[in-house]
Image (cartoon, rainbow, N blue to C red; front, side):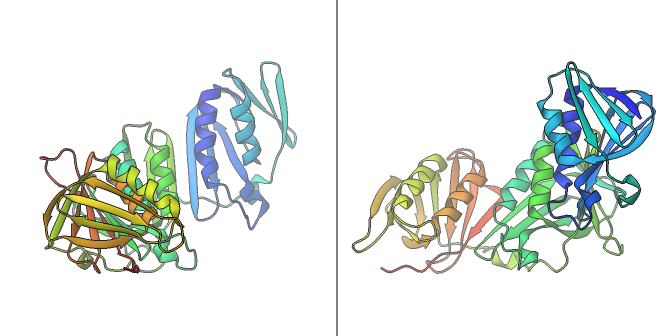
Length: 376
């Protein structure tokens, strides 16, 4: 095997597939990246048996071949080299990597022992990459981090002919985003539960392209796979087992109080006032007479208060939230203003965005936040 490739193309491909490298492999070969040179293309692939990533790019191939090399070392070397052509040459059981005056020799792993990687399911539909990345990031922030509750570490995906709905929860908050998309398969509908880290990483990494193709195996399929593809890159991921909890009934249809607040002002106040307590200690909020008073700390401990102007509609209300979760929601709405809607001091609140004070409420994204008990 011998080929020459531009450094930028190599780095782009290696960075993509290295996301699927195993950190605790059950076999040594899973530490590697497969390099296959054939025709005028070089194909890279890596897998941890839960996800599998592939990339391909054009290269000047003088001799075809396939080899398996240590993945993280290849990634570090490719990023360290200058922006010049890089030549790979297989010499026995070692691969020579040269660029200008720099030369590296990499050991090879047993490529014959590398597992067969799954194929991408049939394309289900297409979404603009920037919209997909934003939607996933808005939802993934609410996913759980406790691996002992795997169902809550995922992003729930609902597919129908008109839209894609994403949802995630850690039991203390719930984020839901609906996206209009272009379906490729008529009358197709399915649900999937994907690892939040996996889908968030894939979506963020594909923002440099125009569109992302989504692929979901039918619910009747034995091999429950989802896939993402764009511009020569693909990723497949096995779906999580279990059922995502029902969530739509948690979103109230009627509210008693709404508060319209500038996001930047509220976010800065939340961060300042929360400095005096632990990040999990309740932050108290008192909504009254177009003023929001924030308070943290009590007794002999450090305390902080701050008041900001708001536009309040409905009854006055006092409530408390986890300040970190509140800040996450304010950041996720992605608009200049946020409307916080309440049905009572002991019931969840909902955050939705507005581009300006008189603008239309953006209901495609909803961030539901559970209140916390606090000492009055």
